[in-house]
Length: 256
Image 1 (cartoon, one colour):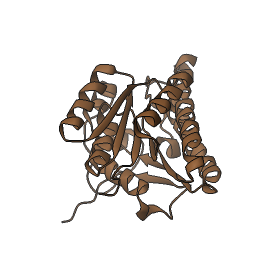
Image 2 (tube, helix red, strand yellow):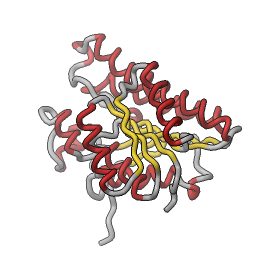
Image 3 (cartoon, one colour):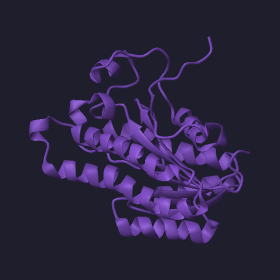
């Protein structure tokens, strides 16, 4: 087990990608702190992991609140003694629409959750990791942060800010043995994604990539489990030479 007795915080962990990431770490022996805004879904996810034998702490947290993020880390350290890995997965997609008609509130909410929330969590993680001279931070970004996608411009720009934050955090953390990377994801098919954008987003078909203004890559759509596997690799000792990278992950290639 690569993460036996390691303490891992996963934000946005009650469903979808975050839930898959939390489950992956738990299966490899980690003590997992689940953070999300929805208390009911969070507690349900925690009970499922506990039922599988995992050590779990569920903390209802709105990452856009600096005070709530501080409380999250205080509770994590009190329960498990440390924070070895932070996965900044929680995000707000928000409304889709034309740039000229997008209200300022959508921009404010996107940056408050995605950029500021990731910053708050990363800062608290560094407070815990730096004295221990070790730790890993993994930020979940999007290919939209690299290529743009006009219907979700507030989301795109806030994710681009996360990419830049990743590079700066990698520089800050290097002297203390802390690695920081980001995954820029393509479409990932989860139930939570469907609830978020089902009225606007096409299903898993050839047309999806046309809708994104991109050529469809070879392979199959990503799943939450695909993402979780790469996150676990980046958090492991096998990836000790990888830091300060924005890694695009857009498709799954299976053996013939």
